[in-house]
Image (cartoon, rainbow over all chains, first blue to last red):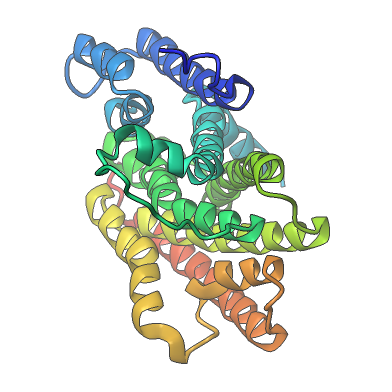
Length: 66
Length: 260
């Protein structure tokens, strides 16, 4: 694995940061919200493990407006 | 006018508290940034995961900045529109479903203000998202591929904003007219599926609203036909006005259907 230094981190880092912020925002919202569609612990797993799809799926499907 | 500003404030707060002002722009930025990156590193990505046979060679086209903006727009027109539609499709129908709307309907407020406040805030969120996303995409494209003229880029951006006004007018109007599920289905058929159908068979009509984003892109590729662009802009404006009309009529009808 000598390729680690060759990765253009200056270009890739913003993508990772944005993905990280999205996950954090989704988790904060999940903490504050009263109830979700489906069990909360499942959404925690989805947000953390499914990369960029997880938080988007949570905001579109998981939030129950009331 | 005070009524209108109060409702506008209510819609703004609702979008703010549900983080719509945060996560939708982030999604657009992410889409806009990954597009130039994956195109630039396509060769490396294929070499790393492609499982190519020994001695395999592939010719890659020389991509220009305009090509990248083109493919970014392709992402926005499919994934971006789906995200925007599903984020705002419930704005009226969900309020009717869970009873919040009744609180509004017993007060002397006009249907026009209710509809307009929702449409304006939804358009604001989507325009902020698209502008931030395109700027981020342009920044990466400028680093990796080269730049385009700033005035052309701004013209393209403004054209896309007009298209987004239509997208939101359709979304909120459908939300006022139908229940959430049906409204989402109709809006998705009208917008992303409509774009596909229009690009497949619509080459005879250069003026349909679905082609507006492509006309905007032709500013960047410098192939713009001003007459077609003007016609598309005119028909988009007509479509925006008629969908706002439909939406206001549907909101008025909701008033009558509510039982207190």
